[in-house]
Image (cartoon, rainbow, N blue to C red):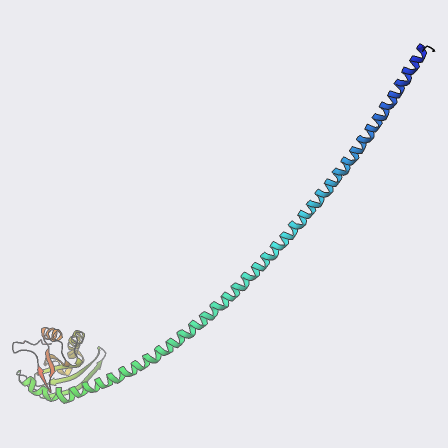
Length: 265
């Protein structure tokens, strides 16, 4: 059996070391290859992720744009609907106003017709009342004046109906003027005597001698005659010194008692 020399051992060790280096180099190269492969896969993965992310962002932007477009469309439709509703509301209000005006015109025409009818009826009533007042004056007052005033010691020579006078100082109308040689009595006739009527006659009395100077030297007295007499109005006229004549059934009487003191103008 041959012995192994040191050289052979060294050669073996050198060969082993070479194989080991070669193996290590192959392992290193394989590791580098795998690392490069891993880097390539990582780069591809990153690129894929970036592509996916970009795609997702693009999708998000697209959906956002579609949502904005949808919202704008909905807002435009809402505005159009609001304008339509506003136009319909204005048209409705205009129609309601036209109907209200038409109803008001109908009511006004009806009211005017009713008012015209009422005025017509009132005029008819006033005409009847005026006729009644004329009948009252002609049929009852005038024929009674002589006896009525004679019963109070006042002679009656003349009775003048509807005496009027107009001068620069003014004008007056006297329903009846009773006259004798020394007296003149101005009689105001009313269907229903009021306090205002009494006051107007008192003002009339103040004007008579100015507007009818023919009677300036006479003793001027006043009287009121009425178909309907309220007690308080009669007392008021009595207190003002006026004779109060009133219808009583089919006759006319003087309501002043015998203690009455007439006023003189």
